[in-house]
Length: 158
Image (cartoon, rainbow, N blue to C red; front, side):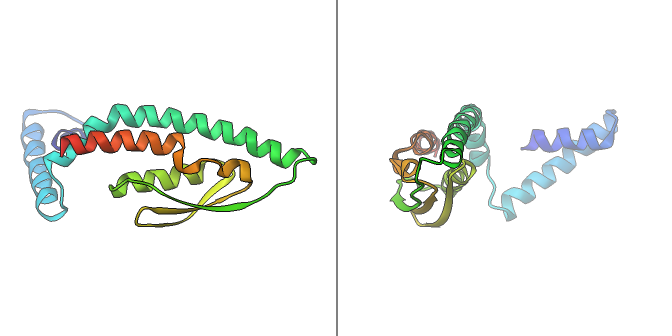
């Protein structure tokens, strides 16, 4: 984060001289120390973030794939008059214990067409699915599996 703050300082300053570099490093250090003391930030948390970057890139492509697949499934439900839509409200529990990962799961479910996260309490998710087909194995989805892998990585670092 210190490097990111310094890069941001350099971009906003518009030039790189000895004086701006020294002042930029000092300002970045003060902001970083402020974040550590008052905003519950630490180098350990930053390390977790950098470890998760490759996983985040992979997860982004998994999310895009699932969005495309759900788009086709939802379009089929809407456009085919022979299919009778059977909406469902499904609840399931996960073993995710990091708030960040719980939020990512809830948002991933909501981003995929045909499903909306209604409620999240502790580890229990309540999901509205446009059709019974979309509700099948939602608790064992690729999202949950990938987030569990990320949680294992985070647990190893902590």
